[in-house]
Amino acid sequence: MPGFELFGDLERKEVNDVLDNGVLMRYGFDGMRNGHWKAKELEAELVNTFKTNHVQLVSSGTAAVSVALASAGVGAGDEVIMPTFTFVASFEAIMMLGAIPVLVDIDDTLTLDPKAVEAAITPKTKAVMVVQMCGSMGDLDALQSICTKHNLLFVEDACQAIGGTYKGKPLGSIGDLGCFSFDFVKTITCGEGGAVITNNKDYYLNADHYSDHGHDHEGNDRGAETHPFLGYNFRISELNAAVGLAQVKRLPEFIALQKKNYTILRDAISVLPEVTFRRVPEGGEESYAFLNFFLPDLETSRKVSSAFKDNGVDVCWNYFDNNWHYIREWHHLKDAKSLFPLSSEVRQGLENIKTTKFEQSDHFIGRNISCLIKLSWTEVEVKQRAENMVNIINSALL
Ligand SMILES: *Cc1c(COP(=O)(O)O)cnc(C)c1O
Image: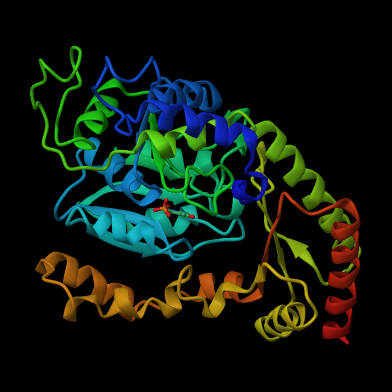
């Protein structure tokens, strides 16, 4: 997944354009910038990549989720349904708005179980946020129709899934709003950065304003601007956008490499009868950023992941005890009421998270192993890795 592995001359050239004129700010300074508008160019490039009407770059993927929700009117006291397996940014971005994260079970897609989503809807529910974890996706048609039926916003956190598709559409472009991260370890990196994408012009304009103190970006040189919308500062800098501009042009190359490496590993371990794979919904194509598979039980997957580690098979994890990605170890969320001045509604929401047993999520995350797919591996290295993985899994199963 990490685009930084192949950082090179193209990235340096784009960054040097910015350094040559010294305008590091994405807005204004029209006369000084020598025609270089890296953030604008990257937005235009991403409009094509995502086949969407509008793209708003922001400072991070976490900011993208907050800005997306805020621009569609989600705020204090609103409930946002999200999965138990994700990155901590999901609940952070919701709580930053004073909204309430409502966590629900995942299924064998490793993200939202539509049945669990439907059961969690209350009169306060405003949005459902699917997280397209590890390069694949949820049952997007089913989730979308639940949202349509209950008049809820459908948001995709596609931070880990750039390049994946569902029924021919890029992941991120299916919901009302899609969110991407370009942090240092994502498939496409800006160093730090993110994007909100949408076909809804109002949401887009709100996102544009909200991410820059409410400025409307009308006219030249920031002269004629007004503030039609409340805002903060979630801007990306020209330096970061310049890196992303070089990287995004290489996306097809990166996805092809991911697919090649993923396929070698998958083909090798799929001969083992005890190994099954994460379900990719019909019509979906992964981005191949990760290979996810299930072993028969938690004990075996713990054994295999530690044997991987001891035998040089790096970047493979069982997330059951991981405190970045899975609810079991999110003590800072469950005990957050003692740390932050949260509203009583948010406190109540966190109480629910604390007391709910997510047995179905434990069932899938406990048995799962998730292997990052690197871009820089040589074919010899991938084949050696595949052989090691098969041997290690085989001996764990004895
Ligand atoms: C990386 C990530 C984010 C946050 O992105 P940052 O740019 O690091 O803030 C959000 N959601 C998911 C699923 C991620 O993997």
